[in-house]
Amino acid sequence: MTGHPFTLAGAALIALPSGALWWPDRRLLCVSDLHLGKALRIARRGGTLLPPYETRATLARLDGDIEATGATGVLCLGDSFDDLAAAGTLPEDERLWLLRLMAGRDWIWVLGNHDPAPTGCGGTHRAEARIGPLTFRHIAEAEAEAEVSGHYHPKCALAGRARPCFLLDEARLILPAYGAYTGGLWCHDPALVSLMRPGALAILTGPKALAVPMPRTAPQIRPRSSSLSR
Image 1 (spheres, rainbow, N blue to C red):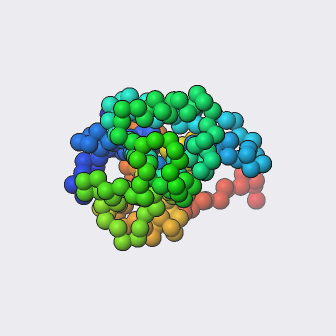
Image 2 (cartoon, helix red, strand yellow):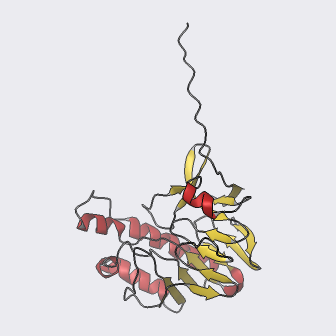
Image 3 (cartoon, rainbow, N blue to C red):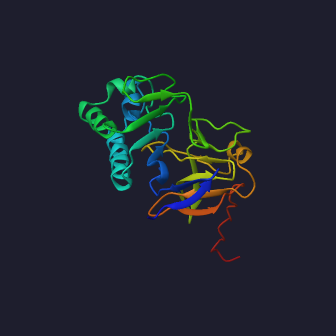
């Protein structure tokens, strides 16, 4: 396992390199901000045309994580669809792929700001979910404890390259966006700095999950020295 194990409120959890959260004792896989149907939504509204492959890429990653973990439950932590119309306009092969992943599993959709109402895809829809000691919601609440959330799409730079990341302190965990084409918010942004306590970690996704101290200020950019003689 190339994930990063940690404990939150007594729950033994693993941040996976893909950006998913795995809770082995519950056989529960948690993902946030899939934004399924984003390219189609942008095209529908007359925006920039993107290659319409992000839903397939996201479903393939999710399929792989479910297969690797043997998850019997999946919790999608809000903004699973890019808007309310997206669930009904997915191409048939992608809709059937999603239904196959859901079959036989306890599947929970936590509502997000992009999908604030049930989408008709089956499963259970909740404003938030309380499982064991943890509360799962889409957007973090300032004074919450034992909270798992998403929404912010945190990212962190390593060796000059931006990578989606989890943010973790003793009170909360914020998941990265799991979907393709989702972008991100730097973890030194004031919105995230104000939520995360001193000593928080950024757990970067990639070939393996890598935990580093959460940067709380923007990196300093050194000016390039001139090669011209003076």
